[in-house]
Image (cartoon, rainbow, N blue to C red):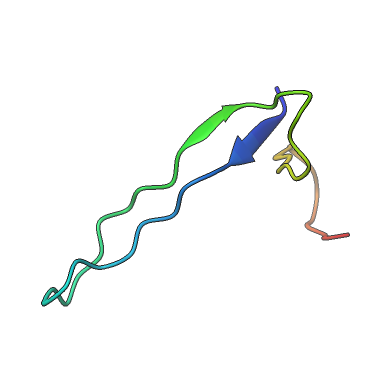
Length: 46
């Protein structure tokens, strides 16, 4: 499944910690950027 990362959390004002809030949803035809995660023997970026 192709997915898109669309929200990354930031620390609240006065807080020293961050709550993870990265959300994924299926890719839509109107999306211009996407993230593909697949199994392999290494890693790469293009």
